[in-house]
Amino acid sequence: MQTPKTGICWRLFLFSCLFLESSSQDFGGQTQFICTSVPKDMDICAATLQNSVPGEDLKTTVMQLRETVLQQKETIMNQKETIRELTSKLARCESQSGIEPGDARPGGRRKEAGTKNTMGDVSRGPADTLTQLSQTLQSLKQRLENLEQFSRSNNSVQANSLKDLLQSKIDDLEKQVLSRVNSIEEGKPGLRNETEQRGRVESTLTSLHQRITDLEKGQRENRPLDKFQLTFPLRTNYMYAKVKKSLPEMYALTVCMWLKSNASPGVGTPFSYAVPGQANELVLIEWGNNPMEILINDKVAKLPFLINDGKWHHICVTWTTRDGVWEAFQDGVKRGSGENLAPYHPIKPQGLLILGQEQDTLGGGFDATQAFVGDLANFHIWDRKLSVGEIYNLATCSSKAQVGNVFAWMETSLDIYGGASKWTFEACRQLN
Image (cartoon, rainbow, N blue to C red; front, side, top):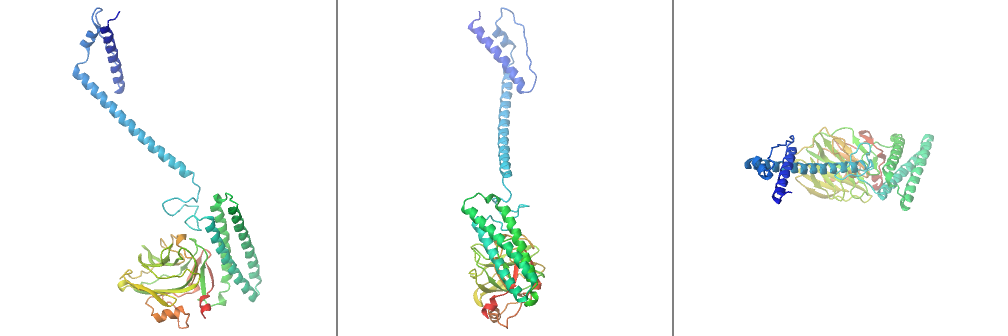
């Protein structure tokens, strides 16, 4: 029978064995048991104490074990943090893989290969899309009516057959628009395929624009080469005109044009001139709810123009590099002036002049939200400051009106892309 003292000593002995075994496992070593013979009548507790590790060694061992436990705890915490980070990344990857092509993403313009939204780099609601389609169809109808009048007067069998074919395709497009309106009104979930439907409509519209343009090209001999206008019926990043030659170095300039637009907000970018290393060498833009601005070497002046009323307006801007002095004229009347617009910076040569789009890079980087919407005509550039009388002659379509000595408005001076159309200029005909 064991006495209480003997029971305590047995527990201490067993605890010591277990402690040494776990310690050896923590350090990655092999377990060792030290056996010592004890006389039968000797106190086991006393024998254990006699053969135990000295006090200092035991203290060192305990401290090492404690340090090991703390290190393992820190390692476990780091591993947990790594697991959380990897789990978060995996969740983000799974969520992104579920996004359909063409979905809008936060943080800037979408530039996804294969899903380029040529109708605009911002997502449009059904109402906006229908409005744009209606405007485009109206523009096509107007051009077909003009072709019809021309074919009647010239008795052209080929023009009649092509006109009938194009009219049929426009009727089909109207049916598509009507079907879409009905779907929206009935609340049908048809918006998932909006990008694909928009692509098909764009392709058809582009084809129609091109075929009508081909018909219009056949009538050049029936009008002077400078009596035409460019029409940009909707905001896209593919409709534009490129001037065939570059601008020279200029220390002064006057740029004038006729514009008609009712686009809102902002009429967009009537023209932009970019040179290597500077996309905003010379730009005229009205973007969003901002007033119209002219940029020279990326420096900005706000212009006091109000032109988005659907009527023709003649605008001119003059500028000289000396002190950066500028003046703005609308319909032959001076509306504003200023200075310190890129002073002593000449307009650089060897650039690219684009009508209807704003360039973010030389000859590209078009943004549909900045595209010009409306009609543009009689675009001229001079390398000097025109007088008030000269500008008035231009705005009133006087026979004394001069043409630009740097760029003059001629059909043969432009390359036209994306379905931007040409037709007889009408503003001066209305004035005269």
